[in-house]
Amino acid sequence: MASFSSSFVLSQNLFFFSLFCFFLLASADLSATFYASSCPKALSTIQTTVKAAVAKEKRMGASLLRLHFHDCFVNACDASILLDDTSSFTGEKTATPNAGSLRGYEVIDTIKSQVESVCPNVVSCADIIAVAARHSVVTLGGPSWTVQLGRRDSTTASLSAANSDIPGPTLSLSDLISAFSKKGLNAKEMVALSGAHTIGQASCATFRTRIYNDTNIDSDFATSLQSKCPSTGSDDNLSPLDKTSPTYFDVSYYRNLIIDEGLLHSDQELFNGGSTDSQVEKYWSSSTTFFTDFSNAMVKMGNISPLTGSNGEIRTNCRKTNS
Image (cartoon, rainbow, N blue to C red; front, side, top):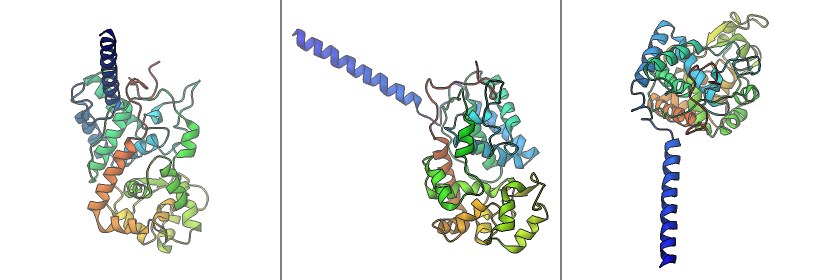
């Protein structure tokens, strides 16, 4: 009888321990309704600020979307990209892919301040970036998707990872596929996510080599760019990534690739006689297909190694850690 009682108690304890572990793990998962009770006005607050910022400057939509990409490609979607350098800490803002090109930090600051006034110490900077990216795309005419929420903010950043992991503008197709694969994203998702270049601009320094040296570029297109981007100097001069509709989220980016008018070398690599040519053609012929694949890929990218549960923190100031 004593043996049965002990076994029953042990089994009962194991059951409740397993149940506890289940709920612990479940609480660490991202959820679309994560702030439904703790901060029900969070998403509408972010949306209002993003719409105002993009209305003031349409390029800001592309900038906020790019912040999300560059954040997720370095260790995780953890808002490490927002951390400022200090006397004892070097963040990611000065990394080669980020320095002088990433923008929108002030918009994130404004959103954070407004969200904090509604519900202090609840909404992470990492979630703000993810939601701001979604609203930026929607505001510029693109698709919406369900953003999974519940990320927490990192307490550190990695300059070296920012320099090594963010795909550069001179990569070959095989290198692009490899860079995305390391983040758990396949070639199809890579082509879909590259469609983000249907909005925004790039600096002369990122496409100079292409317009003077590449052979798979329309000659008139190259000539028109050379007037803005001489062979030396003027590194910061900007040109649209999509010459047709740079402030509208559509499929013209893919059409540009088909006629050899991709701005970056890495863009044109998606349509250069390789394995992704058919995917480019499919997106150009169907905006519905592109929008669906882009949305799904954004959700998957946003789920790259998030900090959840008791990991990380909820920063009160997105530019610095709490302690």
